[in-house]
Length: 474
Image 1 (cartoon, rainbow, N blue to C red):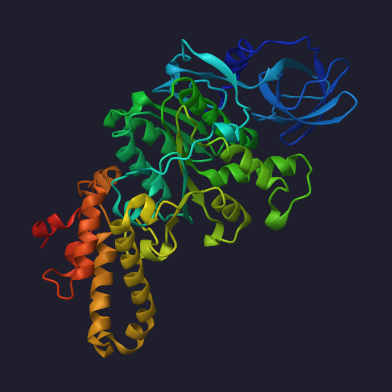
Image 2 (spheres, one colour; image 1 turned 60 degrees about the horizontal axis):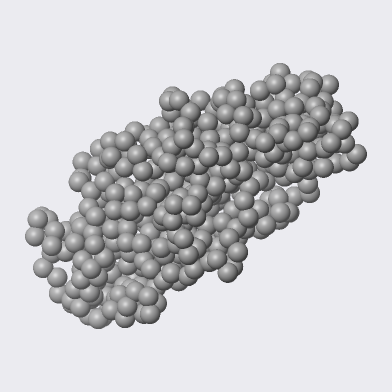
């Protein structure tokens, strides 16, 4: 899992670029992770790849006559003024094809799993234009996850983009790992996991767990870890999309793309912007935040040949959903699953906030009238319970009317019924994971909404699958 893959990058990348007639340049200035390079002959283009020794540089701006400004893709230790810089004549190229399946790769497509470089692959630039509007296809289909709270209240669109929003420690990574487990095993296409700015420990655990689950051979894992240069974290998402587009467009397959964490992409863009000397915008973000995010997100779409379905974890700074990064990401999503710190503190996992989560798929024309009515009934009951909480805290449950007491009883059971033991937490929770079909979720919620008297205590509904498990509960 070492980030020092520059030597591999040099050999793998450079041999697969059609080199143009380029002259060598020399380093004119080094400012942090930004390197200015001067060329006496032809000047490289934006996004071209350069090499100073083994340090990869990507051209980010053309400053003046023969002068370019490049972002370093590795620490700049060992570089000095006047050092020769070699132009490759093209952008970063990464391998695509069947050979990358089952592999763990970095932003350059170089292996970080200790195995040889992928074989029998083609090479493509990581910078690709989104599909034309005429090529896009809208499919109003649901991707069933087996997670009750998501399937009921915020169904995921097949070929759409879903965000998992939450602050630190509310369970974003655990939930996305469970989604991998539930969907990859029942998913007929190809899966890609893109780790942007996350911990190497999580990458190693994911690689091992997916091998044990037997789903790794149909998955590609790409990582730009938090200890790597901001340029790596900023570009690894493009690498993942280039590989996903190959399977969608060339192979005609559906692709499941999981990104953890898309906020780190925005954060890396902010770092790169600061290194480039651009004036920051609101809350310190880069002035190009909207366009950079759109350039990435607009490549995730359905075409007549296949679909890319994306599930993205989104860190929300200080739980502030008005933060510019969170607000811009919201605008690209077809479904948003909001994780609540309050629910997490009550032990209600997954900590999905039923009132804040939403999906464009939750309409009668897509999910059906029954599903729509049950979801509205659940939300209405939980909203009424939220309004009664202050009265209960001040006066007690006994002061409520019988109708309100029945509402509270239903809401508290619904809250607990929407919890679920995960397969990925079995090892430390000791509770076997449950995958619940959407039909059983609807049946369970419909039954609870229709009842005014209950035979089982609230605790019996906690961490079960369908209502059929109530018989086994104490």
